[in-house]
Image: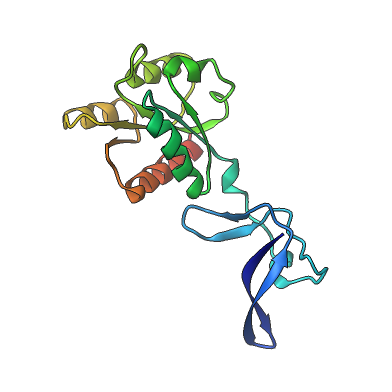
Length: 183
């Protein structure tokens, strides 16, 4: 059981209060707009206007996959992606990703460019050869500015240079998911 601040309208007056809700989590989209509560009947059995509101599709159903050989990136980046409201999975190599069941579920792929074995660019080419059109955001610690135009020309949505800001990643994710909807 969790306590969430709520606002209710009664006769034109807005009343704020905290209520106890049986919830697993609040669902918020990347622009921090409230989407609803998961399993959210009020604990006291009282109904509220919030419950009667139609719910939009959950952003948490959108899978963003991260492929990077750096363990610290694999641990931290999915957490940030989840903070934005998306589902996230991390893979240590392109081969691990390709052998997973996530390929068909991924709506956006965040790839390191330079990895041992199959590089991010190799993975992009392999996905194209398989007919998988997944929007890709590349990331790299290399400061080679000639990479970005090449990658964008090859179909990447964005190329972020590490370290990048949360807002840069969120903007790239929004662009990628907009692209994915139009495929």
